[in-house]
Amino acid sequence: MLPELDALLALQRQDSLLLEARRQKEGIPKRRDALRGAVEGARTTLDRAKKELEQARLARRTVEKEVEAISAESAKLERQLHDIKTNKEYQAFLHEIELLKNKRSEQETRILESFDREEKLSSAVGAAERRLKEEEARLKEGDETLAREDAALDQRLHSLTQDREAVKPRVPPTLLTRYDRLLAAREGVAVAEVRKGACGACFKALTPHALQEARKRDQVQMCESCGRIMIWVEASPT
Image 1: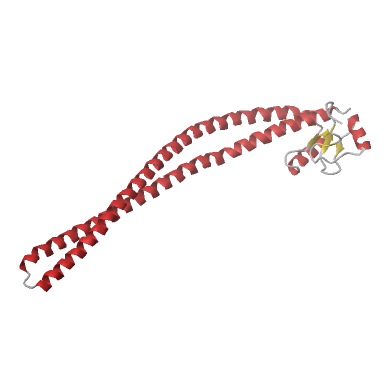
Image 2: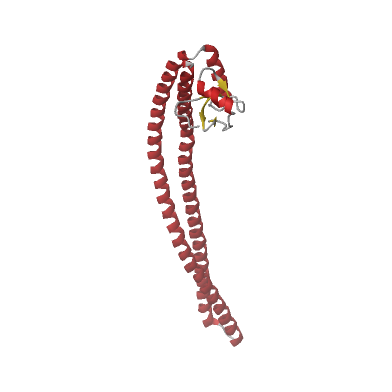
């Protein structure tokens, strides 16, 4: 039974833990960016809602000025009625005044509709402001949480690295070189336990002879399919 096989298993377990810790650490910037992206998205929504509300108000004020102009023109015509000499002119003035009144009524309806729209837009602005505050609070809390996670992962990586360095001397240099090469080529998995009569990494079934050899644990055995080092452990199910 080769003692270095147990050392290889221990080394692989340390490297798997290191790989997972590194992945978690590498994922922190993306998580932070997602939080900031949510804030920026909320701010963009708020800016858009405010702009729409301001545009609606400006449009209403324009119509209100038109109503004022129409009212002034109508009042002017009504004052001129007293100076009209003929019935034909009088009727023409009345018709013009009636047209102005109808136009004013239409514009006043537009103003009322604008008030309804402004109310809805104002509600949308309020909702967008609340959402922005929520996202900003979530960002602040998330930044603090991620900072703690990052610090904890730094400590974990340091501890795992020390544990790995403690295991390395138990593996012969030539075998360690082979292990490191496989680790880089096989996505962080150089050693696989034999599970249910197969390689625990690629799941290729072992021949009866290969399975028997793995049980002996007296040599370094490679998987014929994926090239990883296969090791039988006492609890490996057949």
